[in-house]
Amino acid sequence: MSEWITDRPELSEEAAHSRASVLRSRAESYIALGRHDAAIADLTESIALVPENARAWRLRGESHRVTERYDAALEDFDEALKLEPDSAYALGSRGQTYAAMGRLEEAMDDFEHALTLSPDSLWILEAKADALADLDRLDEALETHTKIIALDESLAYSWVARGDLYQRMQLYPEAVDDYARALEAEPEHVRALSRRGEALRMLDRYEEALTDLNRALELDPGNDRALGSRGAVLSELGDNEAALADLDKAIELDPDYIWAYRVRGEILQELDRHEEAVSDFTRALHLQFGD
Image (tube, rainbow, N blue to C red; front, side):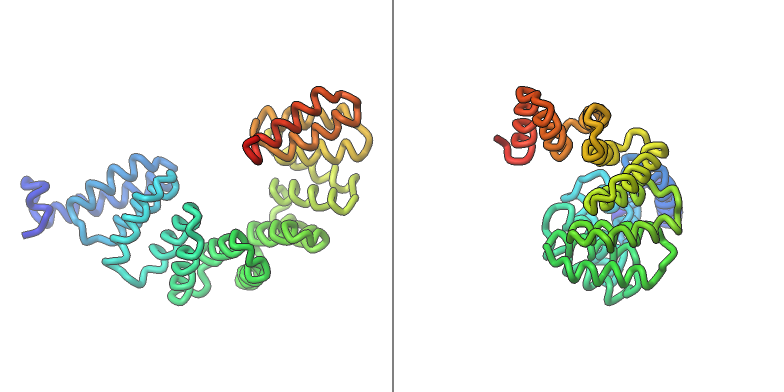
């Protein structure tokens, strides 16, 4: 006799399946709204009613993953994969969970398996590229990003992701080109503007960098990374007071912004404000190394 009869004796089997189906559907809308605790509650009841439904386990695992309940997410994805061993969705999501836990080799195993089942799945390819980068396998990550772009050149996000990798590899002209392609697709893409501004700064193209960073901050005034980068650019252009104002705001928005403390410390040092510089360098050391 099925478990649902014990759990909900008042429901017939047909009614239990019907209720579980509606609960799963409502949970999907909760997930779309970012209401993951509500989704988890619905999916938990749905699973109690019909435990053999792989989709319910997958969806609950995804809500657990998004809310950083990684152990619970793994348990749910494992159950989903017992029911549907060749689910690219469950494999990809479990891989993302492993990656978030720092279990990168296990993540790669899941991504590779998922891609044998769904070779052109962009989100799984993106997750694989991120894991490869975290493993410091940068050339392989670059190949994966290039494959993603080849599958669909219209997505601004894909150009930005490869641009970020180029920037990590200190290939700044290539990064600038990719951010430009992203901005062709989506002219007000804040991250593309902010990151291109940073890449241009690294190429000593300060006026162009300032233009991009100004625009990024017009679109998103609370973007702490853009503020930090603009502060560094303004310092290079000789406007240390404006630079300090930007860095102050960036640190106010993110008190753990290590790079901003370092840059602000260097500017304060240049201004002979050494006590304040020491304080910033000390904070940066504490945040990065626990000193």
